Length: 169
Image 1 (cartoon, rainbow, N blue to C red):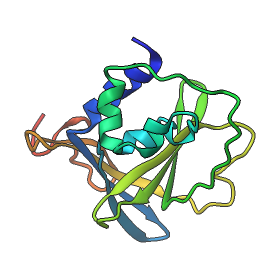
Image 2 (tube, rainbow, N blue to C red):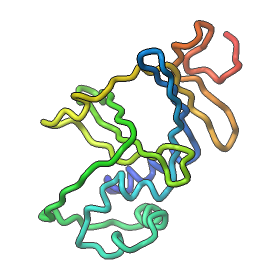
Image 3 (cartoon, rainbow, N blue to C red):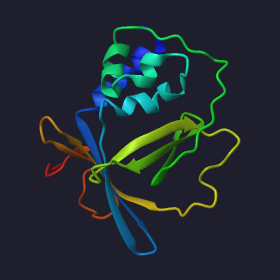
């Protein structure tokens, strides 16, 4: 299995989850939910930059992910691509020793946020000059079972981190 197929398989596991996030800054609280759709994989995997493959450019994006799980694409490394990132939120976290950026934008339905792009920090510090928020609460919801797992909570002292909401320990 090639790397692109492995990424598609890992992303496929996210489709049955949503993350509800509460952040705060200077006494003000904001909430948003991150959701995942098969069509999101196209942009996150950088397939929009592969100009030499007409199928990737014109095909239905949710179908492209399904096809990736079955076929291998050839990448043209000589393509000269420039991109302008448009996002509502920037999340920065460390993966091993490397800071990683995740940009979120509001979906067209206006209900949830979509992962717009994801990449490691290189020379440019995208967080510099941006207003910093504090993570107050993070919940992971399984859309198939309805189970909600509290992953982080600074709002209440009774929360059990990483346990299903409503569980006692």
